[in-house]
Length: 305
Length: 329
View 1 (cartoon, rainbow over the protein chains, first blue to last red):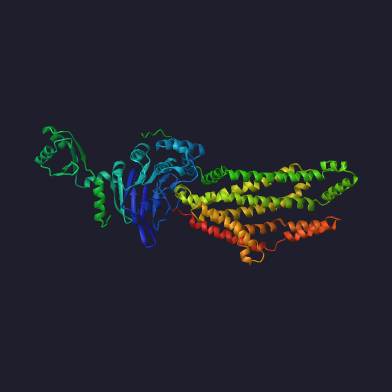
View 2 (view 1 turned 45 degrees about the vertical axis):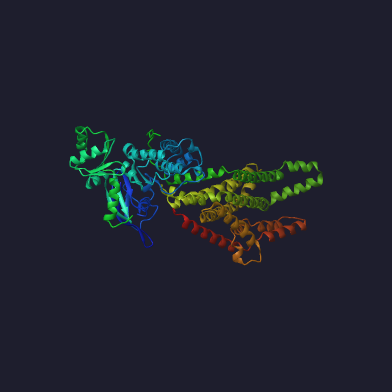
């Protein structure tokens, strides 16, 4: 879906991207990195919004330099910064964006209304985009990125400025794009739990260099497995039972118990609860693994946050 | 809120580049047409077009055998009748001077009014061209689609061209066409073609230069207010300074409106029309001949070359500005 070969981008003496090479298959891909890592620059270079200093790239099999326009025909982009075309109502704006991608007015208008429904915009679509709140603008940005039915969509911090309900809605939608519509998603976000929730693959970059690129489940398995247990009561008895079973239990300040797990399976914990008649508990395998992985990747490569 | 995928899929081949550019032009013009100011300008522009048709109609009816002027003159006595008959004879004998001259003057006046209307219209349009797009980072939205900055620019040029076409070119052509339909003979068609060609030539020069300059001005700032101030400054203030005859040549050609006025003079050549009328028409009134000669001196220009160079420099400067600013920020 995306092939990048030794791509570099320099602004004067500062290198925003440094020899990045990638082969990304279709799917939901999380793009992680500290501030100024080069995430947005990578996306902009792939869209030809910035010209790479060196290197080549293909998006959906089309060379971005050789076929500048056609490389973006089936690509959607929701930028991080507030972007909109002024003086238009929401539905008019999204329709216009569809036309700019080559849809007829009728097709674009129909898709615009469907997509605006999808992103959760009601009557606000008939108001001028200039009067929208941050959350509304975020939804409008997502709608314009999806109106022309792209095969891949780049989302740069798509949940910025959304209230919790709106964020949940957009995350559910973005997560479903690949699963239900086969639209590949490249999502750049600082919120690791969002990436972990909706993506099956992760790319970590820092200081313009690619640090990690793999499936999240593969990366999880490479790290030590841990389990967090939140018992509904009898915390001490729970901890004793786990210790007696041979686990090293760490009590967390939030009332949870953390222990290293010998395998992916949690069957042995369920068995322990049954035999010791322990109260029910919430069991989460490998919590915060992406967070740990992110920090570890940065420190292994000598990068500080 | 629940996410459902009650969604139609768009699998058709996208329309080509010309369609996408046209989408920019048509949407931009639709937005402009919503402005009340623009509707008023449109009314004035088309009224000027209707006046061309009316002037042509009145003139052609005046010289036609059995026309209303002849009938009126017959009622006013023998003296008036003979004056009108002489006038008709002059027009019929010298159509190359009379018809050509009349249409040159009419089209010259129309171009003056239409240029002024376009400048007023551009004052309302200019922040909407690039300024507001820069302020709202809309370039990113355009350029993340299968479009380049050149396509964006062509679309915006098309909006200015559309404005000039509906305020100037279309009323001009419609007015001329209508007056030709109402004309009594072919002379009107034959001898009005050249003035029409001159009018369209000036229209084209103004269209290209106004499009380039307005895009350049629109690209300078991200603030609509600053853009309007800059535009009015270039149009009115520079125009007033440049109009002073004692200023050095470079200052006199630093105003695009003044340069266009000089180019209009050299394209229409009203001075030649008046000189020919004074030389060739059998006018027995010396005062009339002298006034034709005075008019010819006043409308003559020797600054067309400097004006063309000045306008060219302003267009190049504007092109430099908008090419430099047309990058996503």
